[in-house]
Length: 263
Length: 263
Image (cartoon, rainbow over all chains, first blue to last red; front, side):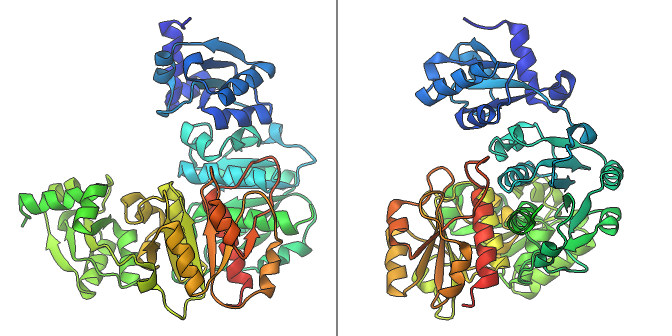
């Protein structure tokens, strides 16, 4: 069994940003990542797998993906290797339709905590923030500006599959501000400098859904975001470093809101 | 002005692990990283810079490195590009002697908080943990097992230069356990499963220096470490993810100890 050359080229082009945009699809591979797709019931269109290289755990993932609706497509090991992004795809690669990324279509009235990633350009940091957002019961994320592409292989991997569990919108800064005014959302801005609010203050102001905004390490948040924020927070740290890693700072703030905000 | 071919080859080989081990030296480049070397008074042996590509800020860094004892060596832009690890060295590359990495030589009686990175193989995670350790006033780090190489370019970059500010030892797991028994250190082990201690408990046991042990995401800490630990702690999170990123979990625990332990 094998797939045709044109289908193979089509899949391989999903390793590029252009291919993903044109086809509205993305790739994920390996046992752990695809277990998360099963866990979050995020079905791929198709799973390509090589019987010869699949472990028992891999076989269970393929069956699980089949049970949530994926087309199962056995291929030779060499075809699988040619479509994979990593050198160890562990015998399986899946193709997913890129989900809706419109803020207002993804928004639900029951949502209480949202993460805003503004110009988080490092794929590892963006993926880590998405992973922490799911871990700390944030309901949705929105990415803007120069942020990395959410469904690129590096972000998917760094998220440890959390991209399959969290609704993620893409919007411009003015769009996010407009939507957050309409809903309305309280904006909590992570500030690297300027006014500092002790984190525990957030306990007292726990009404309505909140939007935690994290900016780039180099630039921080744009001034229009900081100006519109209902609160600016910062993680206190020694002056021996200029700043924390953006994913660390965001995760500490999310952890704090998870523990103390009773939204 | 330019440097000889053999000196150039010598420097270029510092981009490899083998070269760094053989020469006992490492490279760092770019304005931000080298500003941290100045801040922490960690002098390079030599700074190679290209006048043509240096910004004003870069020129100040070169002067700063000179003032703490570095030999300043102007080179043509093309030589500089050939020795750099990144495509944007911003006109300066510095060569450092690898510092002492013996646990007991680095240890000082005034130290209160140490970070132990056991088999943190991802360079981004290791660098981020070192950065957070410096941010949250840890006095020293020790790395063991399959951890990434501390003075490799990726770890140095991910640390945002914190490797210049924090003493970092390299030791085996049995060595760390032996030293921590001699000093003695209270071991706090980050556990991904098993017994969970509410983090605030650590407030009550604040006597003597502590060693926070972080293990790999895939494997956790070795059982001999967990067994020897005085306390096992875990960052509570939703069951929608299996675990947190190791650097995030470690940073949240360090932030907690920074805020609540009065060591």
